[in-house]
Amino acid sequence: MTSPVRIGALVPLTRPGWTEAGRHLLAGLELGVSEVNDAGGIAGRPLELVVRDTAADPQKAVAAVDEFAGLGVAAVAGEYHSVVARAAASRADAVGLPFLCSSAVLDALTEQPTEWVARLAPPQSHGWRVYADFLLGAGHTRIAVATQPSVYWASGTRILRDRLAPHGGTVTELDMSTLTPAAVCDALVGHRASALLLLVGHPEPAVPIVRSVREDRRLASLMIGAPAGQPEFAAWAELLGDDGTGIPFLRYLPEHLGPLGARVGTTLRERLNEAPSFVAFEGYDTIVVLADVLRSHGTDRGRVAASWPRVEVEGTRGQIRFTRTPGISVWQWAGPPIQVVDRDPAAPDRFRTLHTG
Image 1 (cartoon, rainbow, N blue to C red):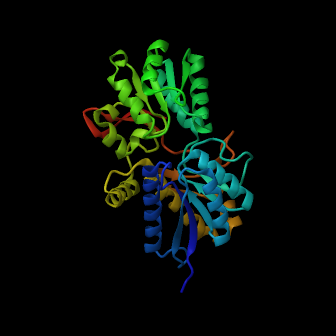
Image 2: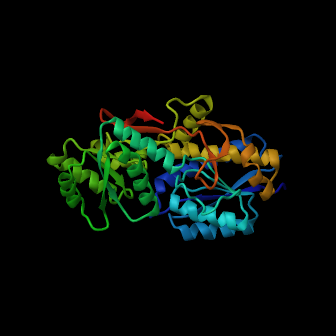
Image 3: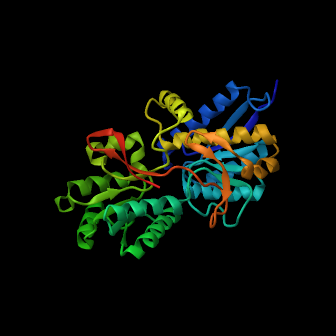
């Protein structure tokens, strides 16, 4: 029997991980593997995913990378949470294991430049600057952010502040480790903020904050935003209904999918029994890249890592190539699409494109 080519997959499948994102990421990864195997695998060898649940825990991710190294996987794929991906990337670099990060955006995935790690999602510094430009274009300069202690949220706040400040914009931080949703409403009134950004976990405390703001007549004209993408998933609409509409967020999809993206989107919808998120497409594209690398360069880990700059493959969201981006320590797809979208108040299952980057 032909031995499989194994890929380790890091996915948040249990709480406190964002399990809906994990489910979509895994669906994309599994569909990609299924199609590779239907097409003959890797030089006749089947491709096999070895899935480990990170549960949004960096230490679980590190342990999984160590396990993968011992299992002989050719590469590691996946992860959604940036802080978890950073721990996994640093460990993969240390043990010499290629890691293609699907969905995490934190700029500093590793402390030092590495040849072992590549990423499909846009770096946070780029995507969140696009979001800041959207805010400015919509006339918002007095911004409040409801935030929790995290290097990811702190990085996002800094990017927004740096982008808004030259245009007279201000960013006021509201610490959700000390404030209740009702106290947030009072603070928003006091700061005369025109927009509140949810730099917090989902569903807690994001959902209670939205409900409190929507119920407060003093804040009827306030825009709520969620650059990290909380409204992308169906659970958001199920929990909040109409209150969850009109909340702009970052989404990494093109305005129109090409033939490959449309076909994959149809299959993902059938697998998930709901509309696929951009995270599901990121998962599929991860396997597209790895399959191309493994077919072209073999399964030796060093050769896989050395192949990142030679990748040129069609993904669901565009042509994928990796480059060295100033300030980014890993190989980076420089061209992923970036949109600011929201759920249409007239039809919560429909998304409106508000801005593209």
